[in-house]
Image (cartoon, rainbow, N blue to C red):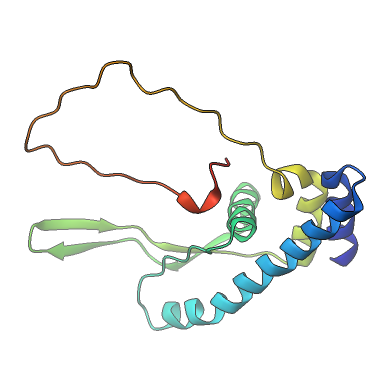
Length: 155
């Protein structure tokens, strides 16, 4: 794993040793964040409660996304908790199941070699210009907003 991280950060840093060491440090911080939160999440899962685990570290979040994408493509995803319908006062509500990813360090090392830039230096999202004229909506409209302010406008 050490060699894979060194090789990936060398490519992503494009020969800048300071940038490479910053990326290596970010890697260790991200893994520390994932490891620190993994035990409580597993304990919650074993107790049968729903899990929504979102690392509050930019690199850790990208690693988690990469693991899920690659594992799904390779058929390495299992079910920890099945999907279910939950009765609420307003009616039925669907709760998606909880999946887990089966992987090992060799998987991660291979993925690091495939796309080091997307892990360590992802491209910035393009700015989207707002509409020149605001749209009107009814006074009783309900709006849901989903966002990720943590990632610094990166995709």
